[in-house]
Length: 386
Image (cartoon, rainbow, N blue to C red; front, side):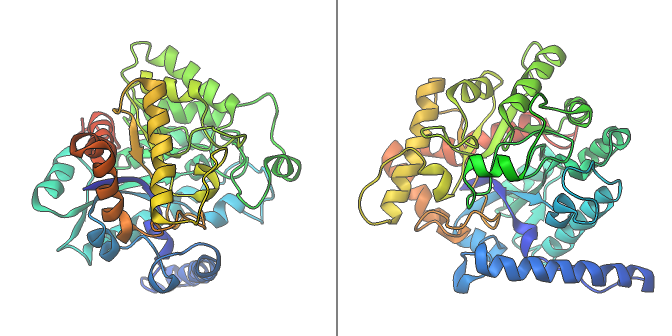
């Protein structure tokens, strides 16, 4: 069984036309945005069967995916063309985030024979016991939390609803946490020219408030996408709040820095995640996992496995253990092209078999599920979990 630490299940869902007339008018606008996202995804994102979504319940069943961290993300709020680049978060973002969360829950109820939302440790274990796929909500982008005055209450509400982690940084500077360049079609240097960020800032006041609230409410901190300055601020803040290192930190969709891409994590960052008992989910994106690694021959499933294993092996070499490597595909998250032979979640059964052949069943199970489950059970979006 695989635990996917980062997959964009909500990306293919379109809000239904329901509710009062005022509500319906709002949904029409959301439907238009959703259809635009759907059109872009068909061209530049989805690599599932017939070029459709790669993250569906049917494909999870096919690929033996038992737990999925279902990522809530609103691209139109992050870009927010009405407010302009680098504008601070709007309070309205949080309401739309909750709408998306509820949309996922309605959809998962339609698959009740095979999947459930897991908001607590008891619900997670119940899904594992009866063979249902456990959906755990996650949030990508601290801008969803709104202005600083709203952050504490909003994080508490997400914790109450079972959110497992929040990825504070993302694609653009929105006054929360400076980020590493993460648009594969732009070289890092060009990204920095087009999308400038404060050079002397990591976490803003909003970002620091978010970290404090996440520690308080037992929501995991995902450091993926962070700049070096944001990483330093996060670990420094945690050192003051939690000197005993009881709070895990995760990097849910990452690669090791074999080359020059700033998105990929350095050995120092990998070691600091391990020091806090965290996990690092290797991403299913060719652009990141192949950077700095030369692999000859035709692109194939076998080559993809070699690339993933290069990162698993490096995490082992840095940390001295297989207890910190995991899988975080980022499928349907605009990472096209995904690795050959692992283009959608239906292919994850093959990946699990290949890892078992390479590492043996016990270590493969650690990487595929046990490490991620350990951290989810230690700290997650509800105080009832732990």
